[in-house]
Length: 275
Image 1: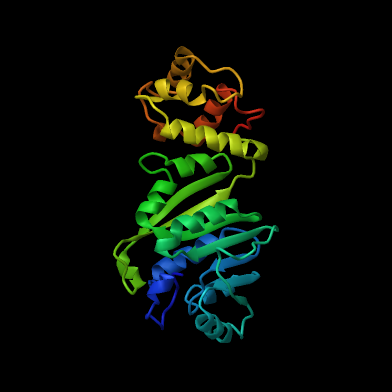
Image 2: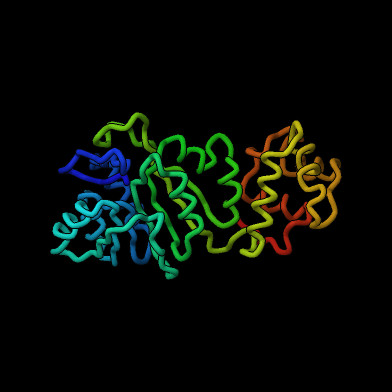
């Protein structure tokens, strides 16, 4: 896993270790966590450059560290101000169902798998994550939403905080990092029981044939067996009512628009209004 360290910079390649060493970035990470509430779970504690400042928040702190030697060293460093340091891989760790906050410098080569694990995990309310720059941009919908972001938008809010230069890490990675936050919506735009059907709908729209949403959407829902298929004219009317060109691509829609379009196609039994 990627690590945070001010002393040990010999990151292990097989664990994707790129230690975060920039004090300003560490301070920003901690300040973002400080705006949240509840116990904190750090993904990849390394040698404690982020762990130690997090301890000063005075909140329960659990640290997951995939490398046994590093975990033991971190236990010794945090003994004066207790933290629970576990030798554990986040991808295999059983997350608590009670509210907590996630924070971590995710290993660049495992980012997608970890993000999927996070999005499926219960309990957590906020996540403060350092990932590859392009991943952070895509997940936050900068320049248009990706399918993965759109599939989870009704339940999570993704935001891009800042770019983190490669020089902030040791050893230096080949790409910059991106600091982002993910927040579980207090009032989701769709009910939890709609998630499977909604995500299938988003997949159909993103991968379906057609030269724009006006063509794609009716074809995507045809034969789905969940209500009548809207006509092209009805979809065009909805698009124009939302200020969207009929030839626009799926990436152009916002979170609220995805939820409304799902309802338009007869997919949602209940849609909650929200941002």
